[in-house]
Length: 78
Image 1 (cartoon, rainbow, N blue to C red):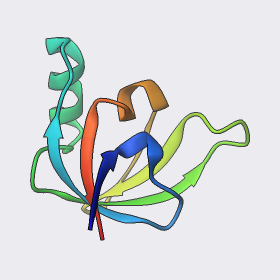
Image 2: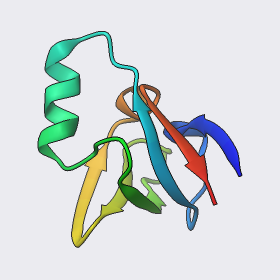
Image 3: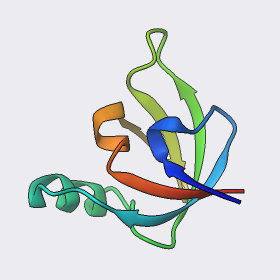
């Protein structure tokens, strides 16, 4: 198990969110609204051709987020 920023994960990785380290309350609220909260399991599905944004699976939902947003999400890869 390795702790990294979500933006450093690879396609196909399964992760558990450890912390949302966003300094901006607006970004933190947006991520929480998308279901990205500490303790939730994620799966990295794919990256856009230029690497940004990335598509992840959160529960039964598919979410696209920018790498800049993914930098604020600390995960534990499995």
